[in-house]
Length: 310
Image (cartoon, rainbow, N blue to C red):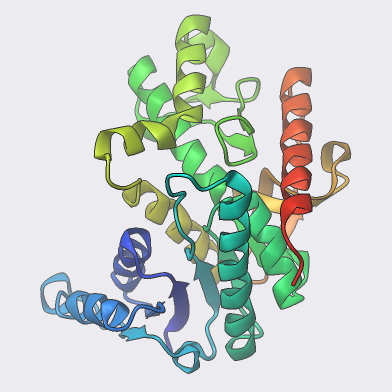
């Protein structure tokens, strides 16, 4: 029997996630969206690729939450981008309302699901999801650090001339340019400390580019944002849950004492398996990195204060 994953939000990122997951062959996917016809059209298009790709998974496009019933994982990508003239607070509350409604509807149909949050501002939307679903914190996970770490590793590989497969580096903290913390102190290339393998100037350039990775793509595309790498990052998390892989990954989790942080979602290394988060780690880092992670948690707490209660 195949696993079932619901993707809430059938935009470019959601559609790419659906493709990646369906092509594994062991995951049935539901694309859920409020726009009539759009998720159905994408699901049909993807299903018609199966004869060439060779998968037998079922793809369903839906505007009805009943079709999501019994999902093992729910991925929430729903939300809207900031529009001209819109304040940050207005966007925060609009997306909080969307995510709250989505999470409330999803949990009714899939009470045993693990929820992976992609919607932005991601750290704050994790809090909204946790409150709306009433789930234990182990089953609400934010994906931001996965994408940011992939960008960081890519830039380090390019600058060092090494294979990206041998670059072991993570981004912790928050999921904004100001709050993400690309970790230098524990990063390695093929087991060689990053500070030995590369000059400080090159490392600093990679850190800066990683922090601005999302904005760089938006500036190039002009009419959209990244979706290939975000989808790949999220799907890696989905498979870690469905296959009980026990992967240690940089994701957003509600901290309960790590680095002195409590009651805030922040990016930390965690073990991800069938039940969601199984363990959260507190690695030995440089003092400035620890302080930056604490600052990211404080920034998320300030955002939470701005969200209107419902």
